[in-house]
Image (cartoon, rainbow, N blue to C red; front, side, top):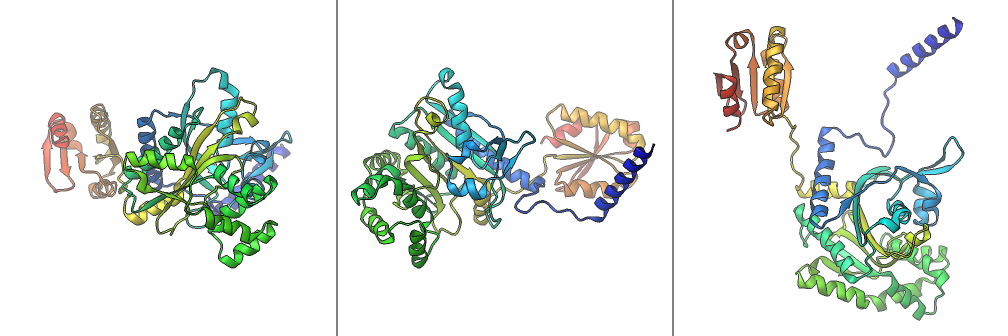
Length: 432
């Protein structure tokens, strides 16, 4: 009995605490009210539309992965500073996924022998990074991932870029709004070799290049010094390489030009992307004014599947977070206005009208109409206000007279016109 009393006491204490606290969401995490979820669904639908057009198949991976999956495959910054890492109850070190490419490579390696290649895959899900929250950056976000695996030809890069351009165009953005900056990490490797740098310094140079545009000239020199690389040598390489491109980049741009898409592309020798697994073409998508962080980024990876136990398999893909893009679309006025799904609200004036209200609601729903119901408790005005707040086009009012006559009072909330009609006539009015 004493244990029960203590349990009840602890429950009361917990309840009192909960009632006295104003609990907020965790820093960097978002609440998705209907208007917010509408925007996420809008993006997802646009993503699915373009992926389906190109024959890509949807997949998904787990939210938790062994920490080792990212430790040697992602950027140092993500692994050491941004990943949510903890031990489970069995003592295994695990992480909330900060990105999806290592998961995809692991999944491909597991079933590589039974899959048909090239494999075209996409996903849109939640990811987590322990970043400093700011505009366009949170600790939880949605990300679109899109990849081709098993095709190392130039056409794979062209197709990925076509998908990006088609998606952005479908959102109402143009080449005047957006630039896709393109580079070739293998080409940069060759330039570094020509400068006499050893391969063990390449990762440091890539780290410098990845952060370069975020630093002023004095900071660049200090950052290069902290990486133990020669600042002037790297800047000379950038200057010498600015007006040159690898043969692969030239071929990509040539094929896009044939489709009049090349004006979206701009070569940029400083674009390298931070992930260690990229081995060839890399790219970033930004607004041309550079008011925002990159909207999207990706590239070709040649060794990741093999590193995770599979056979050698080249891939190319990208990731796009939702936050920066939604902010940009909001600024451009390109997000559709939110509207609740129901077009009709059926108002039961009193309890006696409830049964007939439910019957009519089900009849309407069987014709494909989205219907809300509202119990007015004698206050029709409150019911009409509710219907208007939910942006319904019609309110159907049912009271004792309507039940007796088996008719409906239909009010057009846009025009104010009101009719007393049969259920069949009501459907005709509503579907006009």
